[in-house]
Length: 336
Image 1 (tube, one colour):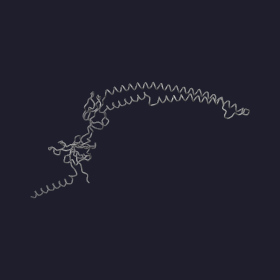
Image 2 (cartoon, rainbow, N blue to C red; image 1 turned 30 degrees about the horizontal axis):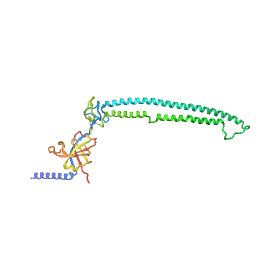
Image 3 (cartoon, helix red, strand yellow; image 1 turned 90 degrees about the vertical axis):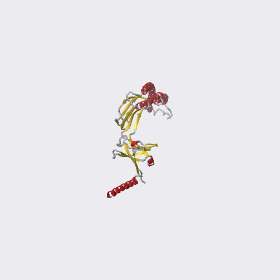
Image 4 (cartoon, rainbow, N blue to C red; image 1 turned 135 degrees about the vertical axis):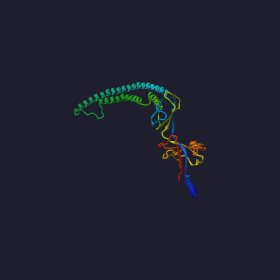
């Protein structure tokens, strides 16, 4: 009898504890399951290509920036050759035109210098004679009446005439030189414009060629490889699948009866089902638009079909979860 009473007491205490625990925490948390998943990237090219090199194998780890695949496009090689030929031909024409124009400028400058020197020489000779005459005249000032201040000597008049002549000769030459220099160094030359246009096209082609060298977008793992060296592939064919090294999201399902307990942006505690000390905090970033059957692996009781809404949870990449690892999810309600 005493043993029975002790047994009943233990049962009552256990039920009381469970009821109290449920009353305290049942409204604050609920637990469900999910699968940790790596973000998968399908690497494709938007044009038909020939595979030149595949530098990785399925399952190999790569670092961000590693070259994982190289390809070529025959049309780009042909375009590069044609554009290089056109640019070279136009540059040759431009050099001939430039050389001719520079020759004209040099000739005009030589003419300008020669005429300036010729006229300046005459001015210098006249000024020298006038200087001598003025020196002689100073000695005769006592016996020769002084000329009026406004009377100009023939030599001075001749010098002024020569200076005007220099302006009339030099200024047109200078104007022609400026015109040719503006033409030479200006940006509106038809040949120069055409060369720049073709060089821009060539740069675009080179950029497309560079895009045929595929680099690892981040540290991660190569998934599947769907191409081989020498193979010709059409546009947008999946060449390689790439996974980030650690899972970055969790796929889960919320039971119909719990749909009102979760919404976009909610914080979710994600805990490993095997490594109990491994956990992190994620956030709900996506919710399905329909009710579906929950996969057997994610049911609390695998033997009974249950239905719910799919959700996606983003988690930090610095975690140690395994790809497709089953994790425990729970969200704690904020207390008022």
